[in-house]
Image (tube, rainbow, N blue to C red; front, side, top):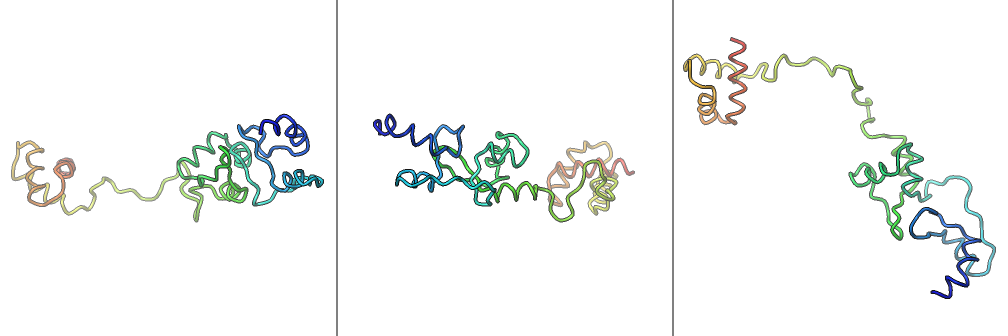
Length: 177
């Protein structure tokens, strides 16, 4: 290995360029490397883009128009596939990156809600039309002066649900009376 690095590697690197020059490990095109090693002329890399091209994080970021760190973060959080790892360099297929670029998350059918637009009619309060409001009103009328936490605990035990939910219902019933 040391002899190859000293004697043959400089000539190899002058004929065959690394696919990811900024990578810690040098990764070469298999066809080019085999041609060089068999003494054949080294074919040029395809000039046009191919959907099966392998892109590192910097190249993927250029296609997406974002930072390379964001690409790695997307992969970590599942917005992109984890990709493949070749000698410590994470790569993605061009088709996957272009698909993500052309179909960003949250942009599906209907396009999602745009910022600042109302979603539609809103309820006047969270418990509007809730039948438990009548039960809460009756409990307030039956026990004036009793702390709401005590009434809520009793209602939760009697009717189910959490005491915190009953406290909210009691407060709403108190406001509507």
